[in-house]
Length: 132
Image 1 (cartoon, rainbow, N blue to C red):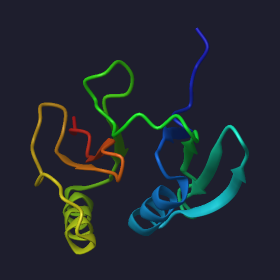
Image 2: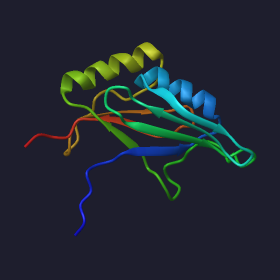
Image 3: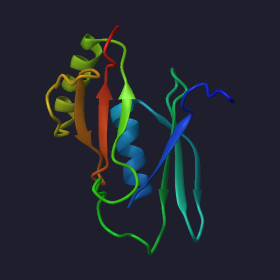
Image 4: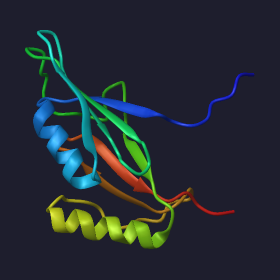
C-alpha cells in the first residue's frame, strides 16, 4: 500500500477571505504567502513560518450560504496538534487574550482538547494526542 507522510494543508470555504486571513494570521502567527481575486473565487493562502503548515481560505462570491454547520455532510472539525499540556494551556490563554470563545481543556479518551470556532463558525481544536 502507498504511504502518506502526514497532512500538508487544509482549505476552508469562508464568507470573507480577507477577514478570515486576518483572523487566522493574528491567532496562529501565519502569513499570507499567496492571494488571488478572480471572478469565481477569492483566495488567500497562509503559511506558518516555523512549522510550514499551510491553510487555504476560499471565498466564492455570490455563493455565500451562511455559517458553517458541522451537522451537514462534509467537515465536522479540524484539529491543530500541540506537543504538551503546557502548550494546550498556552493556547487557552491566547484564545482568552484574543477574546475568542472556547471550551476549557477537556480530557477525552484519545487526548485533551480545547474547542473554539473561527469567524465562519468552523469548529477548530487544539489537540494533544494521548500518550502511550
